[in-house]
Image 1 (cartoon, rainbow, N blue to C red):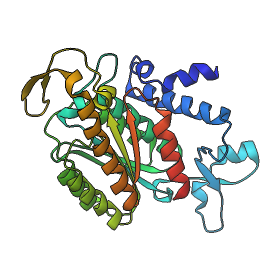
Image 2 (cartoon, rainbow, N blue to C red):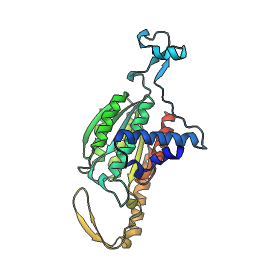
Image 3 (cartoon, rainbow, N blue to C red):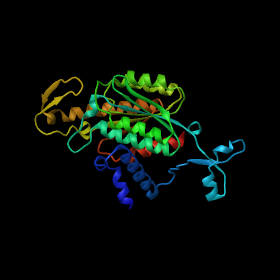
Image 4 (cartoon, rainbow, N blue to C red):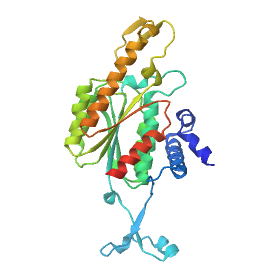
Length: 298
């Protein structure tokens, strides 16, 4: 049974499921199953929907059915009592539409990951919102913590399509301006933009006292450049095309990509931003574990 659930941490398995809500639920259940079996200690997930009655609480909020079962007084939790506001920010620009053979597009993978994170957050009674961006904000759903609100987020993720040029810097500034209460910001993007512009925007979130996780999402081929013979490369955002022999420039490409990644790692570390590099073949529990680790430190 455990292995049955843990298979849902694999991107290619999740892609065969019927809808976004089922994907989110099974990814989270597979993740929690893995936590319970892990030899590592210190991680736990508590889904609290009630808290003990305290003097001063309104009597009308007591859950009488639960009292009948337990003999104790509990009140239902409401949105204003949530512990944390979380902001999921997903890059939906055209470059996120790339996928190598056998892998999901970056946007599809990012959507599944964002859906699982939203499901997990609401189960933990945290408020969560969603932003989709390209050159600017395409959709902005402010944080709430109700299960019915989760469906609105999942619907937006289901319909997300890659379009527009990448403008992570300006778009992230716009999101930072809209955040009025400090919380946890999770950015999911290929970061194929000017790193200096992106970092200024990430510092904007930190200046407003937010905790920030950047999930740098790439396709495996974008990291390895393991193409075969002659190939024609087309820019998904400009349409520009170029013919080349990948094997001749593979080493140079890998060096340039490593410098690109290392710069983000260094700059994020210097400014108190958690940086996670993954690709679309990575099981979902890698990013979920990073979130949970961050959540415990807040």
